[in-house]
Length: 57
Image 1 (cartoon, rainbow, N blue to C red):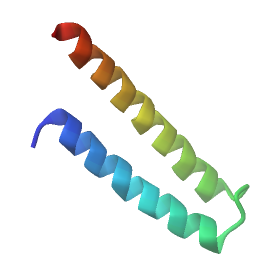
Image 2: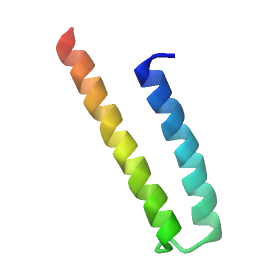
Image 3: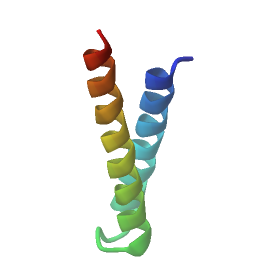
Image 4: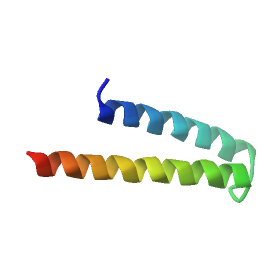
């Protein structure tokens, strides 16, 4: 599995986790906020990777 595929897999898993948390807890709950921040970081990493791949072409 390449780097992009692995990152997309992690993003999808974290999205599912975040959704599950958000349906059970308040959005301001520390656990929901932490999961959201982690997802943001993965999405930022994905965007940087895509940008770098495009520049390499």
